Image (cartoon, rainbow, N blue to C red):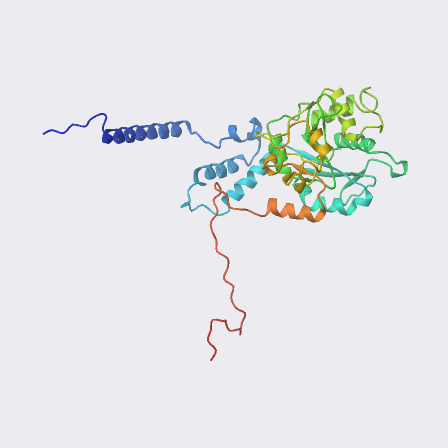
Length: 368
C-alpha cells in the first residue's frame, strides 16, 4: 500500500520546520553578504564623526572579529583580542567625548591630589587641580588667594573661568580630591549628548529650585556650552540671578541658580533602569544603605533611590568620601581585575608550575 505523509503528522511538522528554517537561513545569509551587514557597524558604535579618525579601520576590524567570534568557545583568536578591542573602543570614545577633570583642592591637600593623579585622574583627557597655589608638578592653578579667605563659590567661579579660557574640552567634571570618578563610564554616558547643548548632570537634589540642583559631593558635569554661558552671561554681574559672592547658599545651589539664569537644563544621569550613576556618599553607604542613617539624603533626592546595590548602576560615574587607600583598591578592581563573564572570550591558562629550588628535595620524593 502506498504510504502518504499526512499534513497533521509529526513527521510533516519536523520536515516543514526544517525546510522553512533552512531557506530562511540561506536568504538571511545572502542578504547579509550583499548588503555587508555588520552588527558592530559605525552607526551602532559612534556618531557620524567616527570616520575622521585614522585608526577607525583597525578598530572596526577588531570589533567585527569580536562580534563574529566572541560566542564561539572553539575559536582560535588571540587571547588578548577582546581586551584590545575594548581598549581601542575606549580610546575612540575618549576622542569623541573630551573630558576635562577639574579637581578642587588646596595646598594642605597636596598628598590627596597626588593620589587622584595616580589613580582615576590618569584616565581623563585632561586633568587640572584648582587650588590656592600654583604647582606645575601636579599641575595645580591658583584661582583664589588664601590670604583673602575667599569662599568656595568664588573658587568655583574662578575655576570655571580659567578652564573655559585655557582648555579645550567638550565636557568638564567638577569634583574634589576625595571623589573617585570612573571616567570611561562618564564618557560612555555622555556619548549620546552634544557638548553644544546647554546641559549639566550629576546627582540631582530637589529643594530650593524648580529643576533641582546637582550635589557638589557627587560631582557636577557641564557641557562646553554651559560653561560658555556661565562665563559670558552669568558671572561678573552679567546676570542678576547669579550670586556674585558667597552667601547663605552652598556652592552647588549657587551654581544651579546661575545655570538656571542662562537657560541650562538639568539632565537625567540615571541609566535606563532608573539606577543612579552619581553618588554623594561613599560606596558602602549606597550599596549597603540604611534609610535611618542618612535622613537628609532620602528626603532631598529628586529621583527615587532604591536601597542597596539594586539602586546603583553597573556603570557608576562617581563616589564621594573616598580615602587614598580605597582609590588604589578601586583602580585595581576596575582596571586590572577581569572576572569571568558570559560574553567574554577568555582562554583558561593554568598557573605556571612552581618548581622546587635547586638542591631541595620535593616532599613526595623518598629519602635515600
